[in-house]
Image 1 (cartoon, helix red, strand yellow):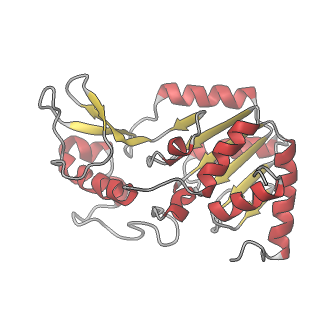
Image 2: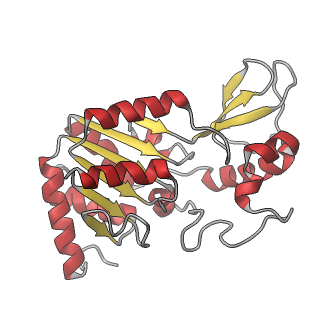
Length: 264
């Protein structure tokens, strides 16, 4: 959809969101795989998502293959699909949505990003007040000793990868299905929510997890302007003040233009 030819109702919503954003000083962005779709990375549950409606070669749902339980008994299975996800992220660069959020962080009192993504693109774009609640695929931890390492990619690595210090098995510092979220990061997020935000965005997430859904619902119930950017309808679409049925990059470019943050 050409960005100068949005339907009138969408253009009006963009105008209203930009007006709220221009007056906000503290903004929370909650992001999922959809924000990286314009980079070329697949979503996982959305339309055309990776593994959507399919079982793995082992006959497992992808959530099972990527679960802590399967990793404990068959790490080779879990690593096979982690490696596929990592390969899909390899060489990816932030898109205009990631960059716009980082730009807002430079201009406002506080911009926090709470992301489900493990691709590292928010950090690469320059976001600093960042919670990668599901971790990062490129940060590897030994399951036996204290060794850890940061890798650019997994190309050429034996899977499951072995620890160079003790020979133990490495795992990425990510939250697998069925595992607890990192307590320290959740505490930081809850503290930020209690301090309060002037505006809350949900971008590119299917909003199936309570910790993604509830902060937006709470904000909406307390009069904080809420925005969902997602081409699809989700459980939040009827809750938020503004649902923008657009891709993340197109929507964020339009908002940045409307509040004239780009230099001439």
